[in-house]
Image 1: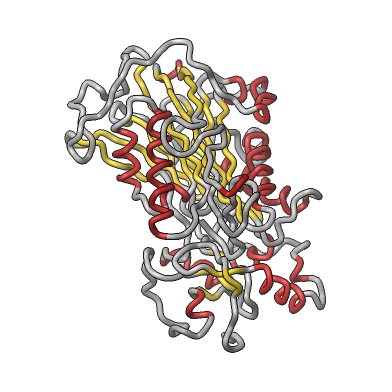
Image 2: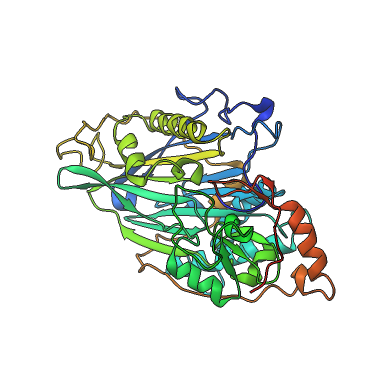
Length: 444
């Protein structure tokens, strides 16, 4: 979730609907695919599902989520890319689609390193490139819109995950007779002390809407994730951008207060204990913990059924807490030993973290491989399997782009006024939906 622009969208007709048809529950529009990783003697069986959000007050809006599955990435049988993009703002749909199309191309064109030699550097270069291209794109207005991005690259026996924003990747790992969650990314929000310190060093104020409106001490911290409005990033002299995340692609107006496109990257070696991983938008994780998601995946033999069960539970929890739902996008990837009909590590006792049995099953041959059309042209480009690299967690503050609208002389106050009209508030969530009315001027 994310920002003060109200990033989520309504499905057509105002009902939550899977992108491929059908309501949450059953398999809906979930797609199934299978890809070999011959260099590691593994097989990936994966499913994807997107369910449009329900917004009764805004019928007919497009989904702002996008996702990408590119097997045999760049023509390499050991490279497989899975990514989710969660757009926000008036142009969130366009921003998410732009990032989905640009990221694979720029991963293979990293100027400072090759994807094979240094995947962490390649991800940093690629996401910086996506951000710069989005700013310059004639058909995408990212001045007050953007997208999160979480991407997982299987490179032989290694898994590299890059993240900007609050979408998430998590693995299910066999530990001490149970399937435990292993975080593959970290949500980048003002709840994190290190991210608060970083954006404040860039000139930002960090406050909830209640604090901005004067209903709460503006210097108080101690925000609770499940109570009231979350802490947000604000300019020192204006009522923007109001983002509940600290990193993203796009969001040009937020760059000057430290909302950056620099990803955190985690690399792990895939071991026999790694059973599966999940890449999903925060529409899944708003009310479900990482461990709860892992437990649900472990209970379903078919990843399509797991996708649908998680989407249905997420949808239900949204409606129990609010009168709407977020867009929900999920990719589940089972990691299987090519010489074994079950998942890697399936020789262990089959129990989830709750002690319930894990549903293991044989992989059917001839499953389709889903590669979105926008990535097909990449299959002819040569690449080699990537090596493992340490986790990258860099703190950085970047200056706004030269084309930053607030740098133009005389435009700052006008932009601030226009943003006050655009940004909306919603108690208890990351998007602002009601007009933000301030009781007094803001000062630092």
